[in-house]
Image (cartoon, rainbow, N blue to C red; front, side, top):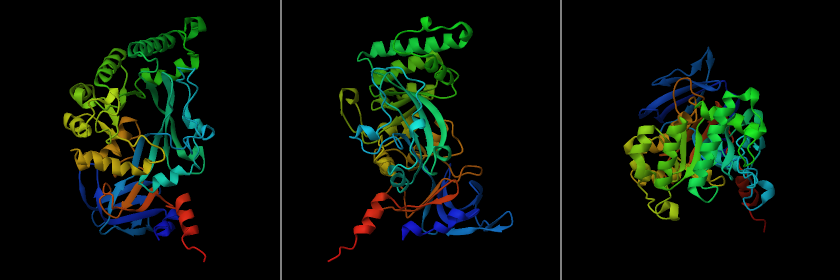
Length: 401
């Protein structure tokens, strides 16, 4: 059975993946990949199945494909179980507090969430789990989908600060508040010793919020802002240039219309390949070729399901981007190496010497619907593909007559 196919490697110190069609950063080719402890130590042809004098477990990849683990860049994984049950949701803070930059959703991350094993079955090994609501929603966290504790799972509790462009109804007012907030954070940095609450603008901004924005001002983490309309994206690009911050656009349904501006500023876009047309007034000019046009212009493209319960469908979403004209290699990068690079975790999302061994072995093309996951490794350790659903399936498979 798939669930126990390679379970013995969970205790292996080294594993050799032999003969699979391997998706390398620059090309696809039949290759061997040697993993030692939690890292990729060698990539090439005809590698020996030994490492540091020890015999390695060997995975026969003939006829299979090997990719880096995929990365869901915009979800509430670990923060929600049942969307319509408020007591199981920890990602949306009170809307009466429009600025909460100091909120870290990773503090509420549940590594035992039933959605995590389901996502792994779709080849997803890492996720950026995000807050929502207000003008500044809080800090997104990077998690690997392994481990029984937050200490083991939360890789970086603050990978970005997320904001929502139209929190006040008026776009101009939202932009004004964002500009004032960043100006306050910059003045606070220069005058910490004499700063007082009287110097704050209203909106519930705390000193903790201003402190949390310092990595944004230093370009250590990006400011991720949800926006779909081309005019909104253009305005945000001006804000980013004025404030000298690293911007990431979330949504970007009409991003293709300002692809040249996004490319010049090297601004990444997290988009949903399923936005084919006018799903709303902000998406009137959405089109299936969005990802393809951005890729052609040289914009860093990140693909997302924008879902927690369906994060497992990330490869399918990437396949739809290919259907819309994106290159196959570009779609693979958009759910692996590109989000890792954009959010400053470069040792994930690619098969290269020194990278963390987050790997997925597939029965065929990972972007095809008919392809199955044959095995998942996170940090060199084999992950069980058992989920709550498979347990229920096995329990009720045979009906007692």
